[in-house]
Length: 426
Image (cartoon, rainbow, N blue to C red):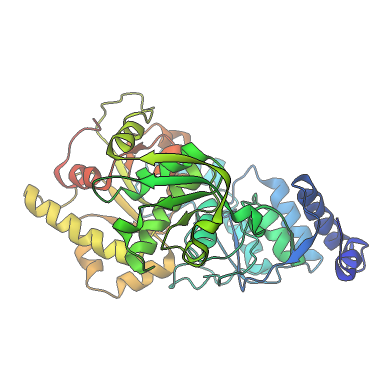
């Protein structure tokens, strides 16, 4: 790899042994993927994926402590993925015992380390760091050192920043040394589309379901989507960005998509159009029947497939402020139609602490609370990682949560019906 004088000096240990080891690690990482150089991280803030004080992550805490002691803290302040625990979320005695004693027993210690390394503020814990309320929205062309898959795909696709799908810990290393290896989605060639996705549905596709279908088909490749602008329009307004947040998270978790282009909508597609297409692209047509096929083939891994749901999680990735407002209206209307006053299934809406703080300033907050819905900053996935939680029949409209846990997926309309009217998980 060709290094600049400054990069070589860091590697040679002129800024200390610890930083030299960080640089060496990043160089080796880049060489695996054929990177020939390192480029500066230019984003104002970083974002870390490792947010949980899992007891088993001893080597991570040791590494963080070594960085802190050497004075090699992040060159940028950073946000981090959601906290794994919240007392507001329903859990029984045994679940809480496992959470606090066997899983996330080092949460307070780890958050103290994050503070020393450069955490933006004590509540900067969310997977949707790019929300306006959070304050970590990259600019077009910014080079990032992120790892959270749903944030990476959003930053690349909707914002036009540049970031590879890094692993946890590599994200903080890039931010500490100030450089990342140049390959993949950082390059013009790596951002060209190798798939054309033709949307031929008769109605606006469910974001999570459409993202799932595309992710499972293209895996880690870059799709160029034609026909979705018919349903989304050509402006990246709040409603469209919220749709793309959920859509992108599904492509990234049900596959490994780090970037997608939507014709007439996303920045690079607007600027370059079909010049973004690589040679010999493959085509995938999605119509109503294809989405139905994908949905009906999801595995149900509950012990009793027909069990009555015990919990509903919404917000993986975290909900936007507008989503919280819209769902308040939906839940109220659903309850009124069913003749009920409160939700029939314990339901948790998750969002960034900063988004929840803004939501509490609105009249919607009291209205939502009156329906029995709980709002939380928690990471639903981390909650479901508890073996006892994993045995619960949990429902969700998040394809990310469905993919990584035992939660069962339903469309938004089906979720609304179940939580307002009650019923089994059939």
